[in-house]
Length: 70
Image (cartoon, rainbow, N blue to C red):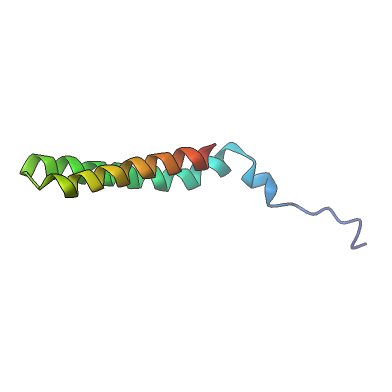
């Protein structure tokens, strides 16, 4: 009976739309946070190097989120 039992593969969740979008949401939330702090840093006059790094991290999070949602 072991061979005839139906197995539910976890691949069914990973191939669905929600299985691809939910992990990517964390990256988009991270990008929103880093983008917010970048704009906040620009508004209060933080030196450009730190603001530039925050912008790069935000863009990296967006790119990673798009890669994961692919």
